[in-house]
Each structure stands twice: as C-alpha cells, then as structure tokens.
Image (cartoon, rainbow, N blue to C red; front, top):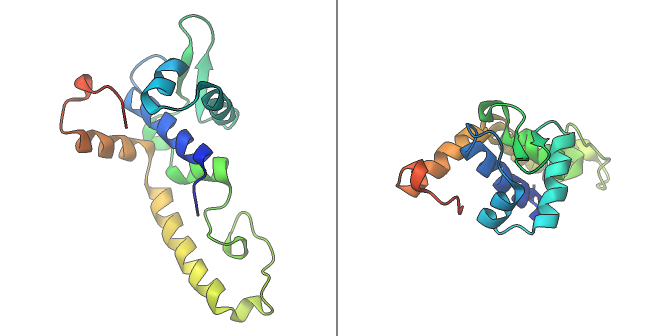
Amino acid sequence: MKLSLRGEYALRALLVLAIQHSEKVVRIQTISDAQKIPKRFLEQILNDLKCAGIVESKRGVAGGYRLAKKPEQITLAAIVRHIEGALAPVSCVSERFYEKCSCPDESRCAIRSVMKEIREAIVKVAERVTLADISERWKNLQHQPVEALDFVI
C-alpha cells in the first residue's frame, strides 16, 4: 500500500475535522491554510469523502465541513480503501480488489505468500486505528493544550 498525495491530503483534512469534532463545521479555507493543501484539490477530496458518507457539509457563509460520524467510528482502513482502493501491496492478495496474479502458479508463489502476510499486517493496523486514535496521537505529540494549537500538522 502506498498513499498518493490525494490520500495523504484526505487524511490530513480528516485529522483537522477530528481535532475540531466538537465544532459545528470547519471552513474549507481553515483546513487548506492549516494543512497547506491547495483549496481546489481539497474541495474535490472533501466532495469525494462526502459522497462516501465520511464527511458532511453545510453551505453558505457559515458553511464548512464536519465528520459525518464520530471520530471513533471512522477507521483508517475505510478512508484509505475509499481514496486509494486496496490495502494490499499487490492486487492478487487483495480480498476486496482481487486481480489474477501474473505469476505462473498463484497457489505456489512465494512472493504472493509474503505479500499476503504484509497485507494482513496492514489490514490489522488500519482496521484498528480510528480518526480518534490519530487525533489523540497528534495531541500527544504537540506537548501543549489543544486550545493553543494552530492546527499545523
């Protein structure tokens, strides 16, 4: 699994929303400025996450985005699968995005066997970690109260 820039930006934007989860909505400009994400690209990403039911939006002058669920209910796996597709390093070991192996004998392929172990390790972590966990980790790394943070991650 390799995150694209789109995937990285999605995670960073969602982290801002998780950190400010008690707020009503967060303006897109606030997220863009805090994370140094081009606003137009961020709009596309947030619209995609809205279609997936991960975020919701409010239109108008007081509009913005917020998480559609509690941060504890949104896993890293759900986000990455939506943005990137498979969590697997090669498609022949993916359970959700399987594609036929290019090797001559898939059942006896040593490389596939190792890649399957790698996929299982990635899935184990990604299914366990939520936006709340990432938010808490971020807060712990800041060594200061959340109120004093300027949300540069």
